[in-house]
Image (tube, rainbow, N blue to C red; front, top):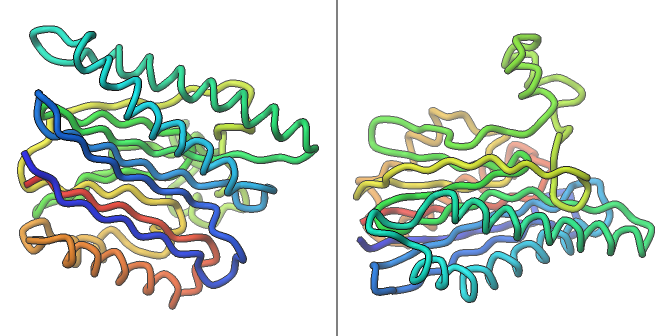
Amino acid sequence: MEFLSVLHSDVGIRKKTNQDSVLIKEAMTDYGRIMLAVICDGMGGLAKGEIASASLIRAFLSWFEKDFPEILYNERNKEGIRRDVIEDSLNALVLDVNKKIAAYAQQHHITMGTTAAVLLAVEGKYYTMNIGDSRIYKITDSEIVQLTKDQTFVQKEMDLGRMTLEEAKVHPQRNVLLQCVGASEVILPEFTSNEYQSGDVYMLCSDGFRHLITTEEFRKVIVPTRFSNEDEMRDAAIYFTELNKSRQEKDNISVILLKVC
């Protein structure tokens, strides 16, 4: 299958630097076209967040170009790539970068960290990894489904039945992360996988892109059958970015849109 892909990242209206880092990579292989999409949100309020997010992005780029080909050609079996092999490899990458960022931060007497939302599309299946509160959505003409779960204090409280969604939206600790790469001693990424279909759209975004936009607003604009080229997808990304800014979103704003054709 073919893919259409766009990325858009904006510093926003309040911050002086963009601490988000974004990556799309595509490769043609013996097993078809492969896509890697990553959004890393350097921690707002933490010094040098942009260094943390860029460091993790570079690690994912190196993994896709050097490590993943070995998995694809040497570790797959007759049924395709084993999910546990991908997860183990990505987990090792994250743990390595976590140690390096933590060591850098300690050396310079600062605190820094980053989220990670990763989607790999290969051989008819997608694999996601999530750390923090950047998100991945699957969008069809009939529905929008959040594939990742935020690793936040309020999400944990909701899971335990101690907080409602309405309470979580206004809770003073709503932005507190339970995990982030570089500032957590223990990293436990969340993984998912499933098949992708022609016509599916996947949206990866930092929290600044979706805080002030409702699911219904996304559904009205991001309609897969309306996206026939990347220019139309880019227009949607820019539209929501500017809408966020008009609603006074304070954070950096980043999004990746990926359509399966």
